[in-house]
Length: 297
Length: 221
Image (cartoon, rainbow over the protein chains, first blue to last red):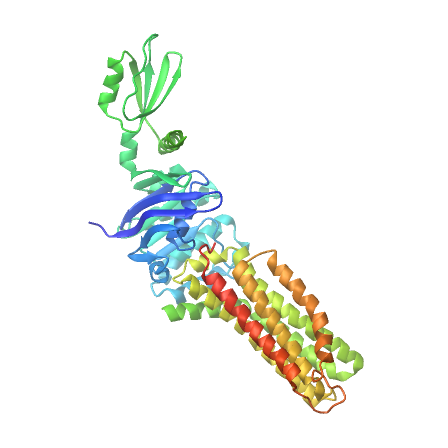
């Protein structure tokens, strides 16, 4: 069994207008988990609890074998954290930040830092306040990657970036992720980014985890079935079908548990299966959220 | 590593506030150098000295504590291998060192100038009490900034601190042993000692309350 680097058990956190409910999460060494959800889903709260920036009201959190928040200093030695809204000291240069981090972390790799600096086209002598948003994210990423953390936690790192900066950052992450011992938790509402780099996907909405699985299983399980429904035929309620939209004779059934038997069941009911479509991660994400909201309502 | 991370955070904050501490020390020394040069110079020097003390307090707390939160560099620092208690301790210790060094230098220089110049030595107790007022003002502002990080409460404390000094200076000068302007020696009576003790106690209490309030927080960002 692989080493568990992040473990959430029944974690709750209540704010005045938002509640994180019964979050259970497990991330193993070498896994790359994409945490996907709309704005306000609870992704950042989950990550802040993981980093002990916010203390949970109930439940347990373990990071790299350490209990959070009690043993946070020891846990954070092996964690690299970059957040979209993380700032650096505006009046100081990137070189100053690099020296500071190098003094804190014995694992700091100056050669790798120089390599990243060239790849990201960053000038170490430039004050942080003169950098663009994309350059600031790259600088924060450099400060984290060059100390080679065992767990990388990225909270919406590509939000607000132009396509080129986003591409550069994702490419660098892909390369970093080739280290099979390193685990990554990556939150985003850009499903394309998540699909590109993650092997595990967890969907969140309104403070709850609504689904979690490996990427391939998601893509295999979810299908959209286009049907021709002759007049007088009523489509049966089939297990695993979470939504059916009809427009005259046309119907589209969305399933999260696709099996070839499903087509046959519709045919037996008198419908004609016109097409079975695979869904993109974005479509799966939206369908999952809408289905979850319908269940809650 | 635990000891060294606190040390690194303290050094980092001392570095970031070095110009404020150095600049106000220099300005304060110039103000004090002017004071013994005559009655107008005494007035200009004294008022400038008070202004420098206020600038030192407000800038140190603003740059050292408030700015970090405003720039969102707090997230960066708290992502380092540091507990929230260690972070709070390092933050308060660094800011206190950055304040106490100029404060001690300026207070000692002020007392030395009174002792060495024609300014009556009887002013020493009142000047000490006024210096301790600034220490107390700083400690309360630091505690409020650390515990609340509030854009409302910090200006409120600054306004109160700046207004109260206008009442405090005449008050200590009116104390029987506060300032004997005709005497060649200072009198450290119970009245002035009580004021000094109260100021020190208030300063210590403010720091302790600020530290405890911050370390008991459940949400740091």
